[in-house]
Structure formats: C-alpha cells, structure tokens
Amino acid sequence: MPTYEYECQKCGHGFELFQSISDKPRSRCPKCRGKVRRLISGGAGIAFKGSGYYVTDSSPTRKPSQSETASTDSGGGDD
Image (cartoon, rainbow, N blue to C red; front, top):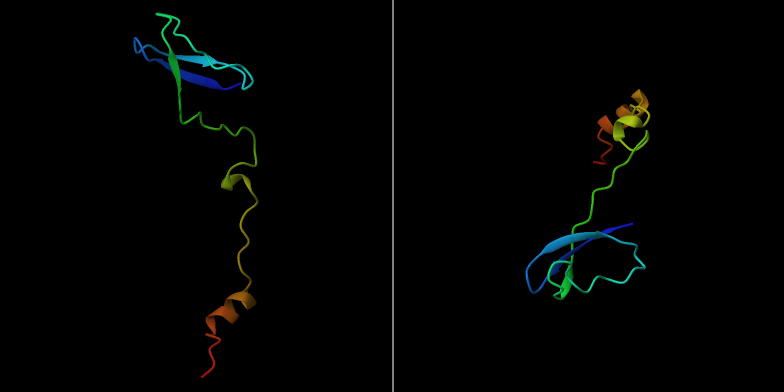
C-alpha cells in the first residue's frame, strides 16, 4: 500500500497516510479540521533483493575469439 502526503491549506500542517489505492483521499486536517490537499511525491525507491539484479551477478562477459578480433583488425575496407 502506498503512503500519501497531505498538507492543510488552513494551518499548513503536513502529514502522511498509509492508504490503499482504493481508499478515498483525506479531506480534513487532523489538527484543525481545515481542507487538505494531497501532494505529489517522488515515491520510494525500489529495493531489489536476491541475486540476479546486478551486473556483477550475471555470468562473466564473453571475450571475443581470435578469429573475431582478426576480422575487425584487418580494416575490411575496399580500396
């Protein structure tokens, strides 16, 4: 469930609510009962846990064979 940030338009009180996406947005401030607006936030970072998420977790990179390097080093240009 996401965390939503709110700010009161009357007293300026800021607060966060842990709500389901299907829940109605909060409309009143818990301090002064004034109107609140939901703020747009950057969201939380994603935490990848376990193996397979990092470049270092994959198999070693394949080095080109001698025949592959020889064909690229010859120039291959038509004169």
